[in-house]
Image (cartoon, rainbow, N blue to C red; front, top):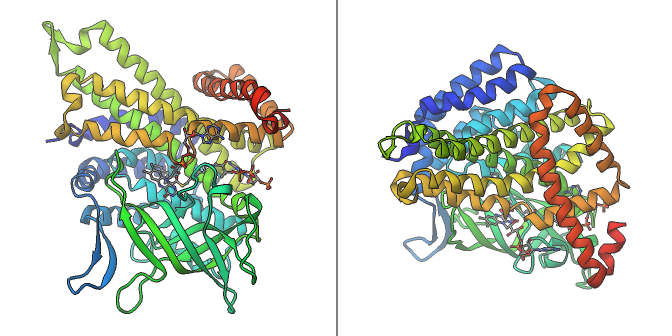
Length: 499
Ligand code: MFK
Ligand code: FAD
């Protein structure tokens, strides 16, 4: 039996960290009763489904028995149950129903924090679904995306849709602006047909997607670079013979981790799509999706750390070495304490970003809050992504050899944490995003950061948030320092930005 399947008491410890935070900020009994009930459901039901997703990974059926191309991505029953549960529990919709005003995002992300390590990576489609809903909300909920918005944010499982986020192409995942080759050919009815190759598309069993492409004019010309990219909405549907309309699934990727969910390479061959940004504003328009998915990524990183710390602490009360339990070895406990501190710091920092997002969405954010949200989103994503790999690795070591053995369920935690620093922007690319927002706000975001740390220093409850915040800023700033030094000799464009 995998070690991760005896979770009930450990989730209670997780709830202590969570409840401590929530009691300070949302002292509302219905939040606690919902989280307690959900925590029990995760421990008793969902964790087993997560394991099932791991041992029954998706597979691609390209042809049916009669040789017809079907491109069916076959997922486990547990993966499908995750979708129903996500709708019923409001794992996306809470962010849009906003039952607790500016604290609704904290409430939603608290549920995701409990769900994530048991979710079989279902948090990935949920992140993209939330991001797509956010983009639609920001551009206006009207045709052709009105129904899509309603479906993404519903609690009815049979109406619920998930969304993909198809940005990465072979030529570039970081450099989307220069790497995107997909073209959008205008149709007489105002829609477009997309032709191109999307190199990474996760949770490809989604019902719709947001994607980027270049509009081709009547002479077949396109505009290169960022200014040539527009944002498109497309539904993933099948014709009467069961064939995908305008899409061929070329293959499912064979990945280090995240094996529970399908990640496919897709050929877009005349996929019907609707432009939902102004022409040439694709990157700026999808930025709202990036903000939300990067925050989800940070929640998942903190949750992975939390899970491994809980398991390590529990093991320390059962395993004996040199005649006593591990918990009675001060050196071992020092290791666990360091993991615990990292985890608590990450949790508080992540929740602070969720708080800021909630304030912005309710219109209660101050200018300082908005600058902080813009600055801290890439910082927290890059910091917690790296931290999760380190803490989960330490966690595996705390089990000795057993940490390396597959049927404990522990290696999966490690494999799945490695992706957190890669997708949704690598560490360097996010450091450049910090530089971008510092430069484009004429330094206002940094001013906001230093005012915020001063406020935190003055408030006793903020001190615990301060350390990781300062650490992460240091990582980002040291990257910038290197970049500027390097740029001085190699790349005059960066110097201009850094100024
Ligand atoms: C468990 C949780 C799981 C989460 C789900 C995981 C599923 C997997 C999903 C993926 O991995 S999806 C793919 C994610 N891809 C990336 O994150 C791309 C990484 N590359 C970047 O982030 C680049 O910085 C980016 C492509 C966004 C921009 O490159 P450009 O085109 O060279 O940027 P440019 O020209 O500086 O900016 C264009 C506009 O976008 C500007 O606006 P304006 O035109 O109005 O000035 C920028 O200000 C704006 N912008 C860029 N980044 C922004 C932003 N605005 C707000 N926030 C940002 N972060
Ligand atoms: P590159 O951009 O080639 O980066 C290679 C290295 O160069 C990195 O270390 C990077 O930090 C560094 N680098 C790049 N540019 C700079 C720079 N300017 N300065 C300094 N260093 C730089 N994408 C989607 O669109 N949708 C998905 O659903 C999706 N799912 C994914 C699922 C998985 C499991 C994985 C692993 C990836 C997924 N991706 C998805 C793709 C992911 O977003 C990209 O792989 C990621 O953004 C990096 O892009 P890249 O692979 O082109 O790497």
